[in-house]
Amino acid sequence: MRLGIIANVTKDRKATHTRRLIKWLEGRGVAVYVDEQLAEDLGRLFVPLARWPEMGVQFVLVLGGDGTLLRAARDLARLCLPMLGINLGHLGFLTEVEISNLYDELPMFLDGNYSRDCRHFMEASIRRGDEVVSEYLALNDVVIGKGVFSRMVNIRTWVDGALMANFPADGLILSTATGSTAYSLSAGGPVIHPELEVMLVTPICPHTFYARPVVVSRQQLVSVRVDTRHRGAPTVTVDGNEGRSLEPGEHVEARLSDSKVTLMRHEDWNFYEVLQSKLAQSEGVQCEPEDL
Image: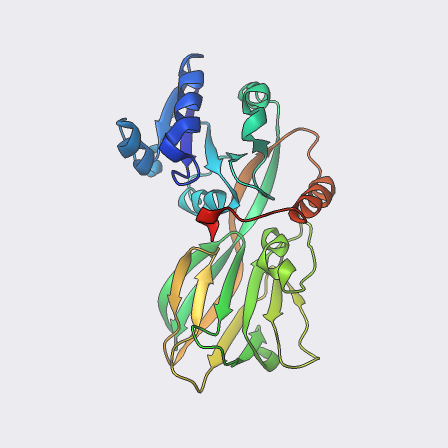
């Protein structure tokens, strides 16, 4: 068996959990491939992620939290490698195994006793006229924000060319069903079952009563333009960790992608049970100093 490992080196200080996991796997005859950062930290041979399928990697273990899994999903998006999320953080909707239970549960996954949870990506682009300036894949969301100034911006949103909304707000969230339990949920959006192939358009603090979250179908194209009268540019953030400013004359387009990521789950995994459990846990979540 051959497996890949991607880890958040900030959460896994000194790669303590990763070193133990590699030793445990190799002790059972499993060949292990690691990402570039881990290869450097551990002094191991680095094989580019794009070559993992041809090397026979069967699935990838991702150590961290949801943010780590989101980054890994984008990095592996074109490789069709299933991922098992191992939670080193406080709260994870996407990760499946807690680090405290890893060695009790991992043998089940190694033996092939798991279910597959397939999630759609969103394709987003920043355009200037018909020119594509930047392109992104998002598993959770694309957030269009007002930038560094506190004043609101005016947001105009079209669906398949028809004007859907025009209102002042702090921003707008375009999310997948997966992202409905992330920032969109905090902004008042509904929870959407991940099997639904839809996108969610959620205003952030709109300065009007009529602006409400809207669900659009997989086939529809959402276009967003932001008008601002203050200095400074609005921003586009993808899955919370990449993006850039919107320059004058640019707009954002997004639609659900044909690309998917496969998350490995326990055979008895149930979305609603996880939802209830995670929302209950979130009531007691506290930030550690390094998270501030």
